[in-house]
Length: 408
Image (tube, rainbow, N blue to C red; front, top):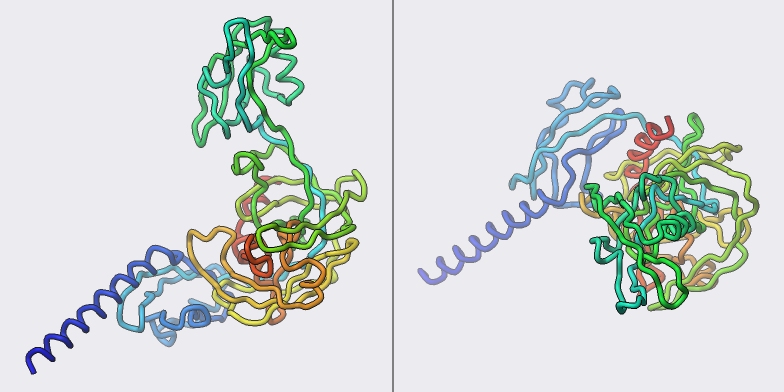
């Protein structure tokens, strides 16, 4: 009997420590604040059946959760008795936005030029790399050369040639810090010109999908992720950018191990809008042309999204979006899942036949569930193009307010 009691005590101890460990894990990954709409109650059970809000609602005055701008604290508990952490709940108005799904062309110019490669120069003294010698690295952003701040590939080449080998003062940014360096151009024995062994990128262009816009301000959000440099993987620093109308002319279907893509072209060079922010949550800017406000939907809060049937609005031909069925498989309200808040799976047979699932260019396609905008497509699973990730519309909308400041 004593052995049995010890066994039970051991099992109980394991369960307690497991619960405490899981609660600590949840404490680290769950956000410290949530948004709810007026009159609604925070309910995480749609996503986490094992998490409860400990404070009974009848202990709050009605004004606490029925008036926009109010905030209050609630304690999250695991299984109703293990403390996770207190969170702040902020009461906001239900957002209603114009949902898009239209393709758009993006033209982005960098703030400075990004170093995408370093190479050698064949000289009379052998192969040398002036850029490496002065400490430059791939991913650095060159802000100025000899005080010249308006830089491009051509301008840098001209500055190197007129230097006649004299050292150039380079100011560059690495991460959050700025640094200075002297780079001495080397005379090549191959073409008898000066070189610094540096490859840079000053712009980017492509096609993506608009997610939503605020008809009252003309601000728009798209992509659901940042535009990153293809060589370094870093977010491209934005100097200026614009979007133009685009049309999809064909699709390269995705297969396991090889993502597909939407093939399209810019319809014209007339700006449709200005880009003010290249952010991990998407591309943001303001329309300069007309806005199609005929498809307005309320926006869901993250806690309202649940696994189950949904639709994406995306364009696979021309410039008119269509609705296709998907399944939201998982929902994650994690703090460190930028652009990966949901796992989605394409179920629509038409879309699967034409694209194989999610393809490049669909990023930003709105995800709609129960008549509300819940998010946007962001990534595809390379080994399973029928599945991918989505970002919460709430997260994109929170960044929109920052974009408004950039526009101002």
